[in-house]
Structures are given as structure tokens and as C-alpha cells.
Amino acid sequence: MNSDKIITIERFILDNQPTYASGDFTGLMYDIALAAKFIAFHTTRAGLVDILGRAGATNIQGEEQQKLDVFADNIIFRLCDHTGRVCVMASEEHEDILPIPEAYEKGPYVLVFDPLDGSSNIDVNVSIGTIFGIYRTLDWEKRGRLEDCLQPGRNLVAAGYILYGASTMMVYSTGRGVHGFTLDPELGEFLLSHVNIMMPNPPTYFSANHSYFRRWSPGVQKYVSWLQGREGDDAPVGERALSERYIGSLVGDFHRNLLKGGVFLYPGELKRPQGKMRLLYEAAPLAYLAEQAGGYASNGRKAILDIVPADLHQRTPLFIGNRSLVEKAEFFINQYDPED
Ligand code: FDP
Image 1 (cartoon, rainbow, N blue to C red):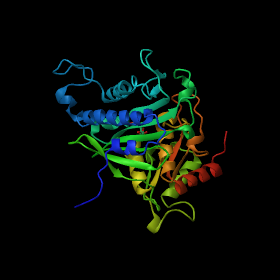
Image 2: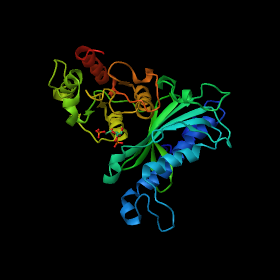
Image 3: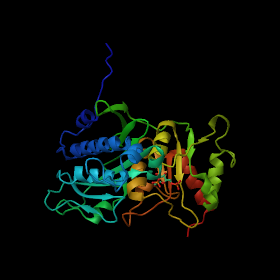
Image 4: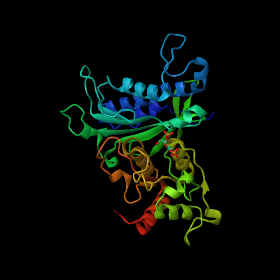
């Protein structure tokens, strides 16, 4: 008899809950896993929109079709607004914070999320993802406020993502390692598939939108040349050479590098020094996972997790992956790009 355990995400979350826990956190993680199943079901039907009706049109049941990112945003909010576990939410899709309706009790947690990242890939059937971060409220007496959302990544109590790829996977950490679960679409259950993920060393890949090379600072250009084995005595060449892989879907690119080792970079550009990535919804949650997996994330000068957000939609340059590769980016930037 094969005795390898089959562990559902629900079981895993429950088994790893501290004995003093109230169950709020466990419930919230479970709500996110449920949202992931709803979104996964809809993303697998994305290619049918031309047949079943476009966003804004009405389907056979008389329901209005929603764009997938609007659907994902809506489902996460509706699963979490009434449970008494969350005091406020913030989504990449909304300019302001999402308060918990007065009719419902508030809870101790703050949920920030990017409901569907990499949305330019939806139309072409390429992997997309959801990213989330969970903080504790700063003031247990009050209903959630903007300040609760503007916490540095160091304060995260959990973070994770859901990858809608060839399989759907949920990968998360509560500060005790990074664990991955794969959705069995027949059972509708996430099953533990990757325990305690650590970024392999030596790394295999680097991921960047190389067509922006001319927009990058001299330090970033030198760094990317180094990654290619064309700059410096210690460049990764020969057996250590890195391959370039770029999907243009942050969750997909991060996930590959998490499992195979590597670095993803979306640097600032000369005309857009803060780059494109959102600190709160993208960079900080993934930085938390990277550090839990033995890696590191930086804006080129300091750890992403140490940046205190000044506003909800703040952008940041992002270098994330194996620690040695990210620290090398900091080295080149400090060496060649004067601080303003
Ligand atoms: P998208 O614009 O398709 O939503 O931050 C969003 C993001 O995708 C990331 O998922 C992805 O890594 C990046 O932008 C791709 O940007 P470029 O097209 O500029 O490379």
C-alpha cells in the first residue's frame, strides 16, 4: 500500500494553525482558496468569450458577462466582506480602500490583492495570477483605515499567489516556509504538492523585458550584461550561465524562478524611475515569499520588505529571486547610478 499522505489545503491550514488561534486567520486563508477555485473555473472558460458573449454583453441566462479581472476582484471582495475576519481590503482595481460594509462585523485582518495580474495575457491563453498579502490591523478598536493598508511588507503575516497555468496552483507562506498546492479540477480540491519550497542554487534563469534595454540606467544595463555573462570576471558563464525566460506575467515568471532558481527584474526606467510594479499588491507579497524561500527582493537599493508605502498604488523597481543575483543588482546600481 502506498502510504504517501494526501493533504488538502484545508487540512494543511488547520494542522498548521497555532493552538491559541481564534480561527479567523484559518478561515480567511480558506476563503482565498475558495476564491481561487471560482477564478480558476472562469479563467479556463476565458477562450469561450467569443462564443458565449463578450464582457458587457448578456449571456444566455440573461446575466451580464464580466471581464475576468472585474469578476476576480468582485469574487474576492464578496467572499471576504461579510465574514467578520477582515477590517479593510485594498485591490489593485480600486483607487481607494475597500471598507467592510457597516452591516457586517469587522475582523482583525487587512487583505490587499491584485485580483488578476498579467491581464494582457488573458486574450492569448497564457498564464495569469492572483497575488495577495495579509496584515494585522494597527488598531483593534477602529474599523479598517488607509493606514492599515500602508504597512511595510515586513509586517505581513501571510502572502501568496494563485497561478492559473497548465494547472492551477496556490502558493503561500505564513512565515513558516513556502508551500504549494495544486488544484485537482475533478475534485475541486487544492492538494499539497510542493512542501517547503526553497529557491535552488545555482539558479537557472533570468527574466526581464529586454526590449527596454535602452530605457534602463547604466547600472541596470551593466547588471543585465553581467547576467548574460558579458560583464565582470564573476559573470555567470559556462556551467553557471543563465537562460533568459520572460512570460510578461509576474506570477508565472516568479513561480518559474521560485522552482528553478533565478531572478526577475522590472527596473525603473529613465523616464519612469519607479518602474511599473505595484509595491502593495505585487512586490511586497512576492518579496515575502522570496525571503521565506531563501531568496531576496530589492528595489535596487534596499529590501522591498522595508519600504513603507506612502500611497496605495505606489510603484517600485523590482529585482526578485536568488539572493546572490539580487544583491548583484544592488552592487551594479550602487556602483554606476548616482542617487538623486
Ligand atoms: P500586465 O501589464 O499584463 O497586467 O504588472 C502587470 C504586468 O502584467 C506583470 O504581470 C508583468 O510582469 C508586467 O506587467 C509586464 O509588463 P511589460 O509588458 O512591460 O513587460
